[in-house]
Amino acid sequence: MKNASQTPILPSLAVLRCFEAAARRESFTLAAEELHLTQSAVSRQVRELEQTLGFPLFRRVGRRVVLSDAGRRFADELGTDLERLRQTVYQTIAAGDQRRALRIASLPTFANRWLIPRLEQFEATNPDIVVSIGTCLEPFDFHRERFDLAIHFGSEDWPDTRMVRLCDEEVVAVAAPRFVERHGLTGPADLDSAPLLHLDSRPHAWREWFRAAGLRNEPVLRGKWFDQFSMIITAAVASLGAALLPAYLIEEELHSGRLVRVGDTAMRTDKCYYIVTPAGVEDELCRRFTDWIRAEVSPITPA
Image 1 (cartoon, rainbow, N blue to C red):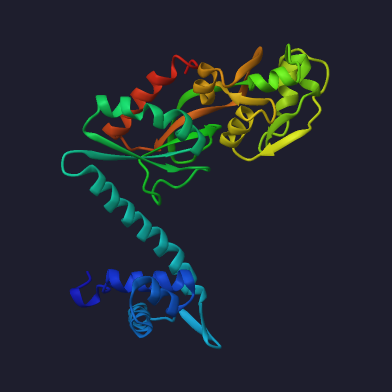
Image 2 (cartoon, helix red, strand yellow; image 1 turned 90 degrees about the vertical axis):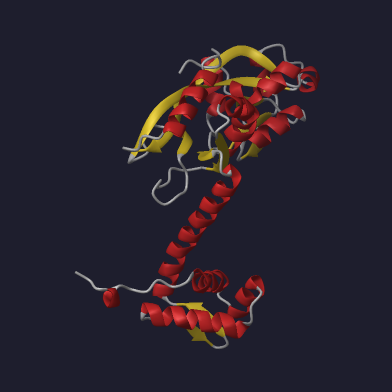
């Protein structure tokens, strides 16, 4: 059994912040400017940390400082830990002393176009919960990231999690009324000669949609390419081309008439949206949010 003298002394937060800033910038001078300290103060704090750990974190190359291998590994882990600590503090401040915080990771376009406009409804029926949303593009480790729940699009392949199917995705062909008039679009067949908008991650989407629409012609893949649905929505509204878009992302544009359907074909993709939580963790806030969002998507696409 260890006694008090055998227990490692944890460095202070001030020491860790100095090292994190110096490591991120690989400069004691720039770290000092960021932290409003003197260069000698930063150097002294880093030296204290090295003495505590028992090995060097930086090496000098001429007049510069460069992270050692051990220093770089430590900096990577520490950066994650400090970010988690910041998020914990921010969530606590946001929630105050009467509410609890629920942090959700989501794809940016889904959050901006569908989730955020509906959050007022969730908070109205759950006044004791304050929701914060961060960006999630790929699966992550819930033990390392400060998220309680994630909304994931893809396959059911996120290890060490519980995945609840939220909804399928159906894409429709749309265009701005001005674009329809300019190119004389009377139906899907006319799209094979019109400028099309493409998503980088779905290069074959238009070909698949043409087949689903029963068209024999292969679409001419001219037009503009983008890496986000949000950009394609803006481009379609601006009459830059016809677009293939998930219907739930353009509810407002379809309702207002800024975009109109070209044909009736709605193509269901082979991927789904999922609600993801850590495996083996039962959380009341996550359950309440899951119940709410599943009820919200049911009028759009059967879950």
